[in-house]
Image (cartoon, rainbow, N blue to C red):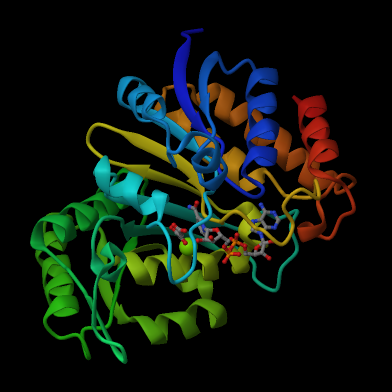
Length: 333
Ligand SMILES: NC(=O)C1=CN([C@@H]2O[C@H](COP(=O)(O)OP(=O)(O)OC[C@H]3O[C@@H](n4cnc5c(N)ncnc54)[C@H](O)[C@@H]3O)[C@@H](O)[C@H]2O)C=CC1
Ligand SMILES: O=C(O)CCC(=O)C(=O)O
Ligand SMILES: [Mg+2]
């Protein structure tokens, strides 16, 4: 099997724990990967004066594939999100977040299969903010034709390639008539290139309700950065929680794979984090690298462990730790 070298960022909170688990599983599955591993975030800054070491950037620029565990972002003050910075710096414009029910994980919702495409480089998420005076702050929402077209094309392209029937554009064009209006207009323009895929649009608050009433009505969703952020945490709740929702961040030249969840400070260091979302993100990475068979092998092992239900982490109702769960997956491999 071809050897690939990938860059790995270890991150904060549960980041290092789930990274260790995932790399162990990748090795046990014979993924044929070599790793260039970097610690990133506040701890790295305190010790070496950089949030991400220069060598980490250089490694990603060489390898073009980054497996990144969550990084903490300070609230209200401090440095800007490194996650957002990486997406912008490397123009990783297409954030795909697929939420699929697993029959072994019982939730109030069955047969959910929603693939969300979130624009990843602009919108309010760009963080263009001004303190006008002590009691007034402005934040600018940026929506451009270029960035809207490419994410909408990514969503329709995915739908067409994967035999999906419908793409729903999620917006708030009734209120933000100019910015969200532009996104919606471009959606219908681009949709004409994909006549075999149904195109519809819905307003975001209505979508939040419909997602928890009838999630099965949704197929592929394309949306702006902030709505996609919020709604993808929601879709994780439909399938069993953040421990189960992977993602890819794709650009033309670079690809970054991470879980949807954050650094989970409330459970960090307790050894109980669920590594599945990050593992499935690694499976998306394997597919990107042309290692489909290994991805299938790992997914099968995870399915079997979930089905047996004897070594589940607490977020899935079990009492196992990250290590036991990881070992069980390796045993299944
Ligand atoms: N891409 C990234 O690196 C992201 C980073 N963040 C950052 O993470 C930090 C914490 O954010 P929160 O709002 O607490 O969201 P979070 O996603 O870290 O945690 C939300 C809840 O889900 C649980 N959870 C998350 N992942 C889990 C896992 N793998 N296994 C078991 N339980 C899990 C946590 O324990 C917590 O109760 C913040 O600084 C935030 O900015 C948040 C989201 C994404
Ligand atoms: O960068 C962060 O700290 C938060 C990002 C986030 O919530 C996301 O991308 O889903
Ligand atoms: Mg988020």
